[in-house]
Each structure stands twice: as structure tokens, then as C-alpha cells.
Picture 1 (tube, rainbow, N blue to C red):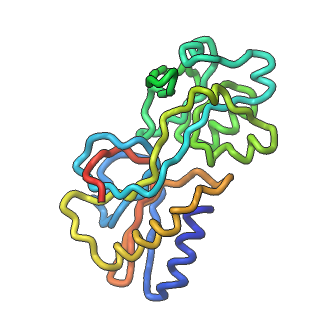
Picture 2 (cartoon, helix red, strand yellow):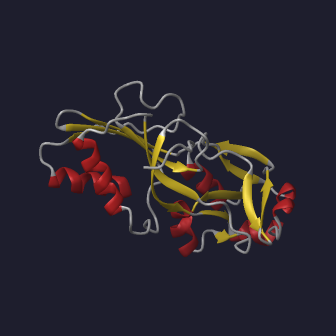
Length: 225
């Protein structure tokens, strides 16, 4: 996994460092139990949290070849109302879906009878021809390469999300936390891999020689570090 390989490398480089990963996609108060910082993928909203931007994360619309052949595919976001849609119901990736059409943003709330907070479940439902799904590209890119899924409306790209580290307001970062954040920033200058587990939400705690992290999907537009 993308995060796991980064943690392995930093623990190898810093033998006295301890990291406690808490994987969660619940919003709530990220910092009420000793979490040092959070990692989020999402569209940031107004917040008092401090955010460090790492890189963009592309969203894509996909369905199976079978669904495309039997139900057809939309050519405009408004046509999604005539389709079964599969919704990744993460609090940090809120509806409606947003598309770039003729230089303007178009918002469309999907017509959905199935939603899940697991992106893998939504991906698998799309592979099973249950509808059209919007997901981070790295969640589905391997299934597209294998021909299990096809891109829908690539001419109308979806709003990009971002990969961020989040910190409490007015936080004074200990050196151990900055070491980890700077390491991740250097690691994540590279493109996301084609296929990784998308359970990318976690909380990171760092003790005297320890760190605590929360990588989740984000929703907070604060000051950018």
C-alpha cells in the first residue's frame, strides 16, 4: 500500500521513531485524542485547521463495459439522472458531483440507490454492472487497464481533490512531526501509483520518539502551510 511503504521507509530511516496509525473516515474532532496530524484526500472546505497541500488527486467517472453496452452512457452530467449511480459516501467528498463543461462548472446530484463509505465496495459494484461510479483515479486505474471498467464522460473532467496534511489551529509542530511531514512531502511529489488500496484515511500520533497520524479524506480549507 502507498502509505504503508512510506511508513516503512521512514521507520527504517529513523529507528527511534514510533508511529501509531488510526484509519478512519469519520469527520468529528480529529485532534481530541492526541493525534499529531491527519492525512486527507478530498475537497477542502472552510475550516480553522491548517492544511499542507501535497498533490492533486484526480476523480473519474466509470462503469463496466456491460453496463455501457446495455444502458448506454451519458454525454452530459444532466443525463446522469437517467442512470443508476454508485456513490462513495465519504463526509470529505460531499455531493453533488462537479464537472467541467464548456469552461464552466456544472454540479449534478447523482440518482443513487446504493452508497458506501468504502471506495472498494463502490468500485466492485461498478465492475458488477450495478451503475456508474465516481471515484479517485488510483482506486480504479488497474480495473480500467484490465478492461473491467471504462471511463465515462472523460471530455467533462470531474473536480479534482487534493492530498493534504491537516493540523490543529495555532499548532506548534514538534521536530518529530515536521520530520514525518517533510518526508511525506518529498515522497508524494511523485505520481500516485496506478493501483493501491484506497483506504487512505489515518491519524498519526508521534510521541517523544513517536508520531501519531490520521490519513482520511479531507474537508477543511484553512491556512496552507
